[in-house]
Length: 309
Image 1 (cartoon, helix red, strand yellow):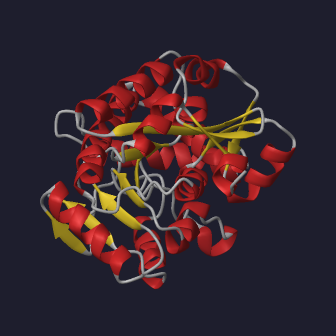
Image 2: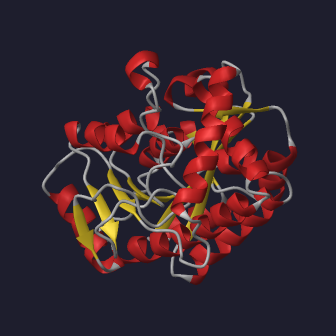
């Protein structure tokens, strides 16, 4: 039994995609188990998979079920992740424990990148990446997503950096680690709920074909590490920058006052934002995730090295 067969469990759809060398797009599962309420989480996950199929690629939602790394999930498995309260949030440090203890785990951006790389999947679509948290100068709270982007060869299509974070410090961290930030049809870094921020991207590329060529070129010349493809939320789903910034500030302050730190902070803050915006942030989140899936599928379909059989 080879390494992949021993560690990874591919769905029937993914085995067929690999055999036929079809483009594949990885999807995280934390957004299902920890990122959205039921039933919107399951509905969104299934809609996103269908959008990827409609745009010329095959979806590979990744999770750990009973200690097995699943590359591609059944509808029943997605439903389970959406309803169960026994699903761990899994990043790099958590993988050995959840697998060895035969537990259930939903992969974060970092966890999904690792598993996608194991499966030779080069394009991953998600909502937004983690980054340097506000006040990190004191707390040293920096998302493992950034370190994974520094060393794992997966392109991450996202709506920019989650706006609850320190965008400027996050960009500095990425620059230090040689991670390029590409703006899809934008010179400005999008900030998850909003299309703009005070910061610029490294390079603007206006088509999935150009971005795929960039990814292929990076791979050809042997540069390790990921690529951030910052894809702005659609205008119809975007929120006003001043309005959402004020709400985020209040949510972050409440998390600090309640000493909610580490991996518990983001779900708490996002839930508080959803409450304070009367559900508008959830609508925005769903809209941007779907848009990223479409662009991710188009990029994967144009990558010459999107999947190595």
